[in-house]
Image (tube, rainbow, N blue to C red):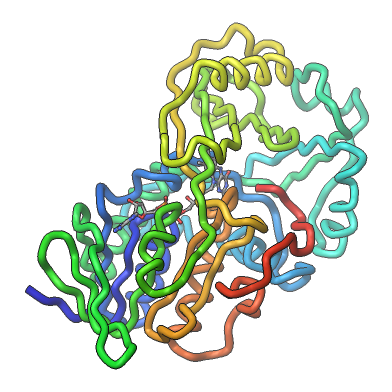
Length: 374
Ligand SMILES: Cc1cc2nc3c(=O)[nH]c(=O)nc-3n(C[C@H](O)[C@H](O)[C@H](O)COP(=O)(O)OP(=O)(O)OC[C@H]3O[C@@H](n4cnc5c(N)ncnc54)[C@H](O)[C@@H]3O)c2cc1C
């Protein structure tokens, strides 16, 4: 059996689902395939932190992509809620970032972008939160926000259905078919073939496997992140300390994250040592959390890239194959900008962000420092 949508999306995480929804709303027939249940990988596992941002003043294309998400998430979440009755849990709870002196070079970036922030004295800090001994200088970011990942994904799946996207979980991509050097089809392991106008590979940490037969070695690798969910009513703000954070969900649940474990490969288990480390971090940061019950622990596989930036664009030599993968620590906040950029590329209209920074064949090495780590 063959299907022939305008766009075939491979991967039903936040990137594939958001792109499918945007493309379908622009009039394309869209089919989305996932090898398993939709929205159950990295996008489900994440903390859902949405840093503040101003797309008109962001310093780099990467910061602009993030800032598009910051600016549009409130309306996008309301749109999904109105359409589907499912609330993605967008909430501007505010954040406190603890910056070590060597990271203070992000302050001019925040300033340039017009992000609201204020350095807190220790007394102001204790007035805001029952904080412990946390290294670094605390900065209040009142416009820092969050979404509830599982709720966002449920809303996106329902919104895609509403927009006419043909959703096909449990249909893994198999092998590409070619004619005259051009991709003419994608065979699925279910014996179906998709013959699409465009193929969008958004398979998170697994995207490299899909692109290898096209002669592309995409250096996207899984980077495991573990999470502990505690039952507690404090703090009220998101607390960010280096690569770790405390995220209050607002319903007596507090999420503690996370590890960065590239060495774990595609292994998605939690480990007693990492869980214990996260609980110690929580108790140091907010001492009353030492007495909090652990409700749940889990891990997810971030799609990591060498410079931390996603790959978004056409596959060299295969014009009808697009990629959107490697969003590492920031796929939720980058999802709306990524979907917009992909829609611009499919339409051939001026892109919302200069796409060069995200091209697949960019040189390796670190780019400019982003204004936020996640
Ligand atoms: C612990 C943790 C904390 C995080 N915190 C944040 C945060 O606070 N803020 C933020 O913005 N981001 C955060 N992230 C990062 C964010 O979750 C990811 O960048 C984002 O989810 C990546 O989305 P994706 O759609 O590319 O990948 P995924 O969600 O992994 O989706 C990829 C999909 O492709 C499917 N697939 C794979 N192979 C195939 C195939 N052959 N055929 C068909 N389908 C296939 C998979 O089954 C999967 O459903 C966090 C991630 C983790 C793990």
